[in-house]
Amino acid sequence: MNAVKGWFQVWLDSIKEVYSGLRGAKSLEGGVFDGRLAIRHYWTYFFVTFAISIVLTVIESIVFFGLLDLKITPLSSVFGLATLIPTISLGIRRLHDTGKIGWWILAPFYNLYLLAQKGDAGDNAYGAVPTDIERNCGCDKKEA
Image (cartoon, rainbow, N blue to C red; front, side):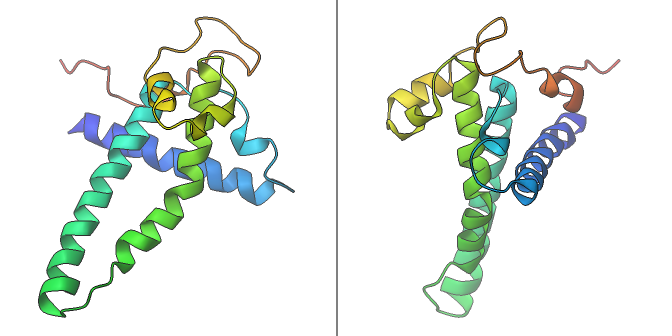
């Protein structure tokens, strides 16, 4: 259970970081798109976002399609819009960790290959090796 709390906390911290960076930025250049992101941090964010999307879709299919007979998906739509910029930002920073430019996020299959690769072992042109996942997530801690 602690691991799930840790994963959700990483996801929540990612969203907060991106939106607080946007609030303080004068433009979309730099800020939330700079730096590197560890592979586990990215995939934790991705899978938690995916799981929440599935839960919202099930709720909508029961409430809006079944009970109210409406063909709308407001929960998924709002959630998708709220997570759009963080998803792009974290994807670009993940690509930076592999030493690639963020524009590779637009290459449909090659970006998935890059997102799954280990990051550069040392510092690269985009910054130092990311260590935030080890501090924030209790995923690796063995329970005694």
